[in-house]
Image (cartoon, rainbow, N blue to C red; front, top):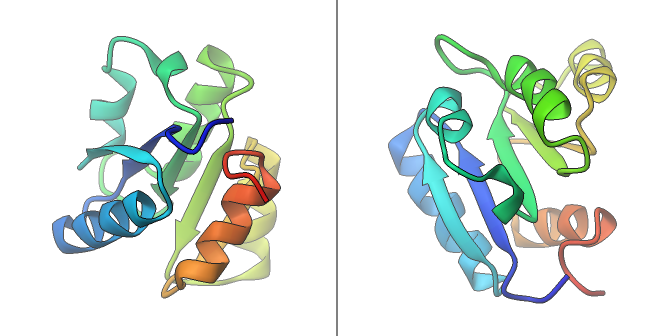
Length: 124
């Protein structure tokens, strides 16, 4: 994928969403950010995205349910899920829903870059 890949980011925490968007842009990607899973799903064309990065713990629809829906509508879309509550059973659940990677908050530039490289969004 080219370094100008479009990444969709979903998180209900506005400050974290802005910070993560800035971090992803610093990796050379374009970003569209969403304050809820529903807003991402309502977007006209999910196939524009090279990847979606979503928080797991959100009100209304969580990241696990978002992943299940995306698996039905955009099967090949890589999904990275984030959590501030690292737990092996939660990580197992995320992978069983179809996530390609799980990162625990707080995470840094290198960890995110590694995850994006592993799923083929960044060269490397």
